[in-house]
Length: 341
Ligand SMILES: Cc1cc2nc3c(=O)[nH]c(=O)nc-3n(C[C@H](O)[C@H](O)[C@H](O)COP(=O)(O)OP(=O)(O)OC[C@H]3O[C@@H](n4cnc5c(N)ncnc54)[C@H](O)[C@@H]3O)c2cc1C
Image (tube, rainbow, N blue to C red; front, side):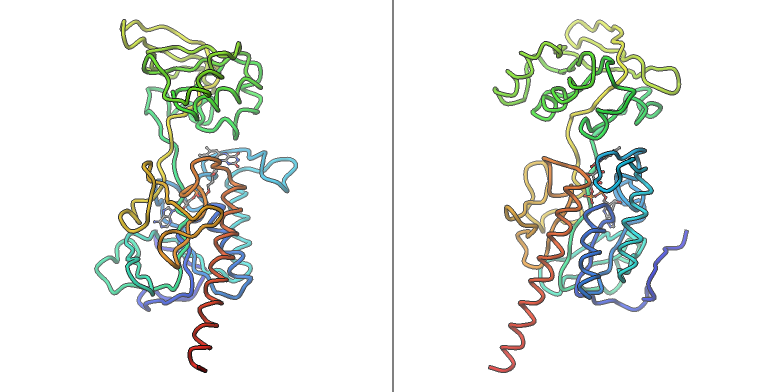
């Protein structure tokens, strides 16, 4: 399929932009909306199945989004992202359906290349917002694909409240702090929550582990892994689980399975150029979206391993846009003063 753009810049003309946004989830589009309204003519690269996601990001893979403010009846994920896109475009964002595959942040203007054009002359930008998102790690269990989003999820806060999980037995896989948080959260909805821990101990902090073990609605299944997801073809009904010490397999009838085994931030593009933490998330100056490179900002899940919500991503996209705007204004003022001095 030919790349789609809503702009008029032909690929052969090497662009220079005041600001480009890489990524098209809630963070990228919110940044674009603010920048476009500030007349900064943002260019947003929405990706072409970048990082395994369609343009629009993670919400294109889900159905009802019930916790995005402004939609009291909920809204389907893909429809919400279409609206984000429409609003960006309405104010003049140039959206380009291509993936950025190479970037050079060593000097300003920054240089970048679109996928398939890495050998060409680079395009340039004064500032960049990295909003490439993240993806939940999965286990590729037998049956997982069939019941993904039909009983299997990687976000208790997003999906825990849906009717298929209400008063039903649920399972969480993972042994870290996020598994404890997810399991505890799910006790509000499920009849009981089983936590499958591969080892004989939790990785979670002591206080979190204590909280988990003292909750009467939670049972920890130590040294246990899931081997197969089973159901009626439409919804998950059962997990085949295995004790890794004895090798014994048995059924665990559950209607929900939540992965809490971490996320993979989409930071391969900026590896060794931006400072990242031990899990690969971009590190930003606390309370801002500023990275360790002046002029490069990061917004959304790519820099947030704690909240990982559409609204928090959108919020940080807004912050990034305002920070870009401020930086460019300051630099323009400095340049003017430099000229008149
Ligand atoms: C199944 C599911 C259900 C969810 N449900 C909810 C919910 O109900 N409520 C809620 O608040 N949150 C929910 N979330 C979480 C929410 O989707 C994320 O927090 C949010 O989408 C993160 O937004 P983002 O802007 O950081 O990036 P993402 O949504 O991750 O999007 C990033 C985009 O950038 C593109 N991209 C990546 N690299 C490049 C590149 N090099 N060049 C160009 N483009 C690139 C990707 O293709 C992707 O489209 C859900 C997540 C999932 C997976």
